[in-house]
Length: 212
Image 1 (cartoon, rainbow, N blue to C red):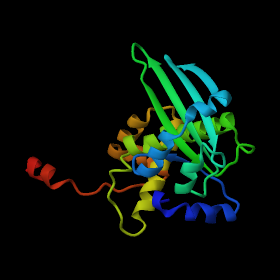
Image 2: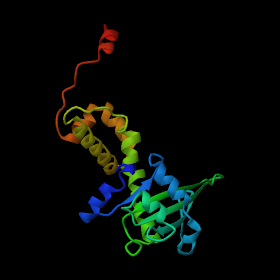
Image 3: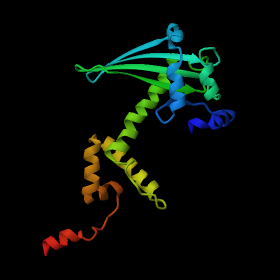
Image 4: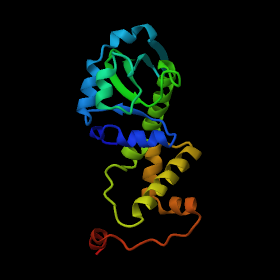
């Protein structure tokens, strides 16, 4: 969705019964700037605070939401009329001696009755778990974002292959990096995984020259 379409696609999606929660990023400068300018102190009374400790980290989150039908949210509604509320999440993560803070902003088609600050926080965090789980593994370990294959069905085939590798790693309790290296370099492991015999291809030209 483009930030300059005035929410046209969002309105179309809502007519179909769909809802959304979208994060505002640097590629949406007008919306992001407007979100930061809002009077967030007006939403302090309904602020939700969460506190999580795991893997040696301490995460604290302060979640506030503003109804865009109110005077406070009116200026953002002019830019993105399809939204109904905006959410701000302030997060502080303490990891060792470091405790950086950051702020993230989200617009939503869900009303405050459908998803208050607490419910919106749960929805957003569920999305983050997907981003930092499957998407991170695909992008970083398997290099999905760096892949430039665009011909025919090859992108779909490669996506399926990555899914197979991720599932295989989880089944054998291997790190995804190790699974990736094994499946790329060990023809026998790949053959056993697929249940087919794979004929070895010709040796690389450099290897042939070395042998000669």
